[in-house]
Length: 187
Image 1 (cartoon, rainbow, N blue to C red):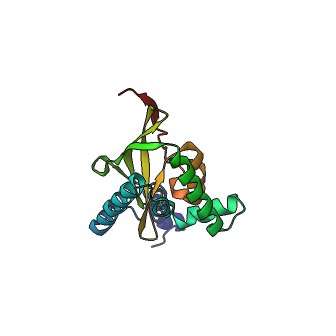
Image 2: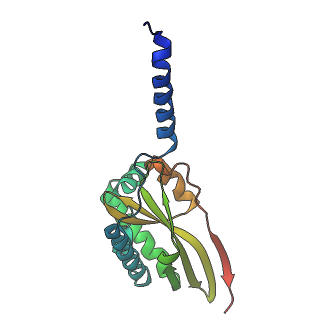
């Protein structure tokens, strides 16, 4: 009995093509946040909240992931130590002119998502109320909880930062980040 080569290989080619198509659509490494990662995220949020309300600029400057920090330094033609000092000084200057009346991240309401590479990330609803010259302004936004190298980093999702975040983390390139809202608060 003689088989035509095309009839023998056609089902295998179809299966291989289907498998390839599925691998392009479904992330290969999609996973949930582990209990240890969840606990570490909670600790990172608590630490950030404490640093923010306590004006602990050194801790706040450490919340930027190393890859992103390196890209920021390169973009600004600075070494990382100089950039860290500049960011800390900028935060001190900015926060010396305003009072943080309220700052909170609601980890219980966080949106758990995954990047194109299947790695988890979270978007944490964040409320910041600042007071300056007797006026209060409230910003409702999302903080990006990003797992990098087994450690959680927290980043403000600001349109000026999103471009660089997506360049450094291409798995987030198709993620739409809500810029949040800002409004005057009358109390």
